Amino acid sequence: MIHELLIFIAVVAVLFIVWRQRRDSLVDELGIEGDLIWIDGGRHTKPFFNRAFKVFGKPDALYRTRTGVLSVEYKSRNGPVFESDVTQAFCAALAARGDGYRVTEVLIKTSAVQEIFKLPSSDKALFDRIQPAVAHARQAKFGHAVPSRPELKKCRSCGFRGDCDDSAA
Image (tube, helix red, strand yellow):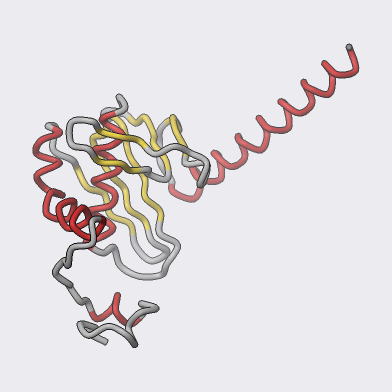
């Protein structure tokens, strides 16, 4: 019995140390002053859901800062922040708001740049900002054609550019 208890305590301690190192490395890398309050643990982490607007989303991390809750979206690519990144981050922020996190800002970071966006205080105003993209995503989900928006930089790195009639590359 004591042997199992010691093993359990050791496992919990190791998990805590690993979690703490992961959290600290993200804080060091991003330079955020605040407390990490949520982190995406991968594919087994359930996304947030906003019932009022029926949107799902999962930021990479949430921090409690002096000004509120900061949502972080990290892109590993070396390049600019795209409008699709902003839409994804805003959708994740709205979804997190639906689960009780009052997200006030979004940080989107690529290997080259980082941008901070202040969010509207009302959920409706935030949804209005992303509503066209949400409508297109819902149309695509149900098999309807959606308008393409080719962008040269994105098309150059797309795996479907050879088969796409709308490619800008």
